Amino acid sequence: QVQLAESGGGSVQTGGSLRLSCAATDGRYLSGCMGWFRQTPGKEREGVALILIGAGTTYYDDSVKGRFTISQDNIKNMVYLEMNALKSEDAAMYYCAANSQCTTINGNPSPFETYRYRGWGQGTQVTVSS
Image 1 (cartoon, one colour):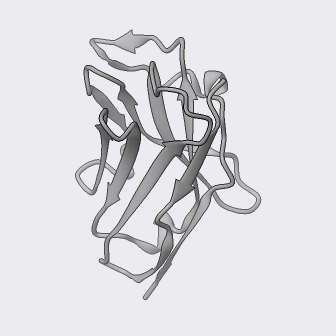
Image 2 (image 1 turned 30 degrees about the horizontal axis):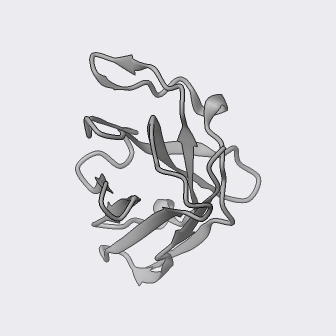
């Protein structure tokens, strides 16, 4: 399975923006579905955004629709998460992961396969302050 590393986190004020990056650290080509997830202490990891590599179709959790954008760069073999209009509730450790056998719903990555995602990196911390 691919091994991934996240970067780009930081501390911003409410309403600010950040761009997270996800890269394969073992030279493997990203394929299937890639996802961004987040976790805060005491809570389960939750899916934020998913992308089907190649087709570029996406899924977003309702909490980030219209504010976050997941994208791919097939030349650089990277996936990004552009986060705008950040809210205090967006503060979390963000992780990327890969699902090489993802399924789709109407062409978009299924949001019901979190258990299939692998290759979790160390995460990148996002802090949002008012």
